[in-house]
Length: 257
Ligand code: CAA
Image (tube, rainbow, N blue to C red; front, side, top):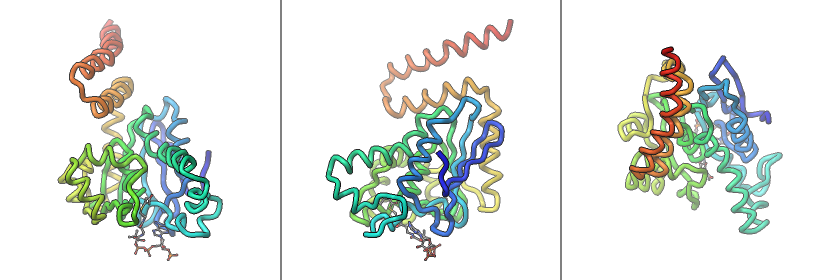
């Protein structure tokens, strides 16, 4: 499913998805979320790493705020129209929106968000949907939903609490204050921060590091570590490690001849 504001480029085992509506700071809409979900679900085995980035001045300034206006955004159902369809319709629509975010945790490739400028609301949540985050020193993150009278509902609350802890997550979401890249780095929200001019190089150097490990091992690693987040029970995790290791160990030993 192609989308006018999502640029898809493939370089060998690396796919780069660029949010591409810089004149609206890569504001997001339900059709974009559907396209993102489709991209995540349709990744073939040939793609090992996905980079999510934004064109222009921002990674993403969040939901297209025109979605809340009576006119809405051309080609999209406005929030007013959605709400008029009733509670069940709202629940079902949000579940569909969430797939554009949650599908990245489930996909076999390692997903890197490259954040520059702003990551606001849905933009912040998209960065949280990735496995790893690399940020420009001058980037900032803000969860603005609460200030609008809403809550973050695009899959971002779980990873945020996991990465920074309950109290910091509550403070960030309740106040909506901008969190600078250095602060985000210090609290474990982003993996690395670099000067804006070095951002692409830093991202693709990280990608190179991931690609240098054997494909099968990285493919087994991501669901193994994700499972530890979702279900930290010690015995269950030890069993998952054993199950992941069995076929890898067999392949390694067989390869030794
Ligand atoms: N939706 C639609 N258009 C947006 C937008 C958004 N989220 N963010 C920016 N734009 C548009 C602006 O309206 C402006 O358009 P015009 O040139 O036609 O006036 C253009 O992008 C450039 O914006 P600015 O001039 O404001 O650029 P800036 O660099 O000075 O500031 C910014 C950038 C800090 C991101 C600022 O635009 C901003 O605060 N935007 C709104 C962010 C926001 O509140 N997003 C919603 C968060 S909540 C959410 O995402 C989840 C949810 O479900 C509710």
